[in-house]
Structures are given as structure tokens and as C-alpha cells.
Amino acid sequence: MRSRYTAYHQGDIDYLIATHHPTQRYGGQRAAIGQSVATTTWLGLRVIATEAGQAADSKGVVEFIAYYADPRPGQVHERSRFVRQKQRWFYLDGDALPPVEPKRSAPCWCGSGQKYKACHGR
Ligand SMILES: [Zn+2]
Image (cartoon, rainbow, N blue to C red):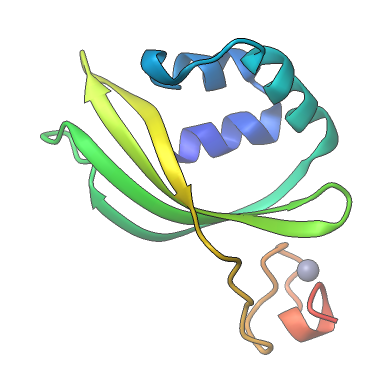
């Protein structure tokens, strides 16, 4: 999952398609991902919870928040399902979850080192 976040961050469209489960790929996906990576700056990833997904498992679930700016700040909060086939993990699908507002005094998610209330929470 982290590697897919990194691929979004770096614009590695081939990797994103290769790690998307073959049954879930769709026509126009390359263009759609290309549009996304061209217009979105990914600022940080926070993993909230994981279930399974270890070497001995064939399924895994990851709940995460990925922060972005396009250029307005926003977040993707999702519970993603992964499956492992032939020793490789694939993203299957996910449920979109409501945005989570950070605590005012928590470090800002953008990595600035400032408190959220003094940074993107203003
Ligand atoms: Zn910030």
C-alpha cells in the first residue's frame, strides 16, 4: 500500500496499473491516473489501521489517510482491500470514508513541523 502511495507521489503510472487487480482495471485508466498525478501533489500518508496483509496471508485491509493539494488541501480517507496472488499484492477496491479533521494542536499532516492550527488548519 505504501508503495502505491509512493507511486502516486512519483507519478509511476505503470506501477499503479500493475498493482491494481486485473479484474478491477478499466478502459481509460491510464489517462485517468495520468490526469490525477499531473494535477495532485501528495503531501503525506497516515496509516490508521491494518488487518492481515502479512506474508502468510492472501488478503489484507488498510485504512489510511493520504493528504494532498490540488492545489487546495484535501485528503483521501479509505479502507482498501488487497489480495495476494502468485506472491504479489494487488489493490482490489476500497471504501471511501469521511474526512478526518486533525486535532488542532497535533503536528500538521503536511510535514511542516508546525501545529495543524498554525498551518493548514487555519
Ligand atoms: Zn500544514
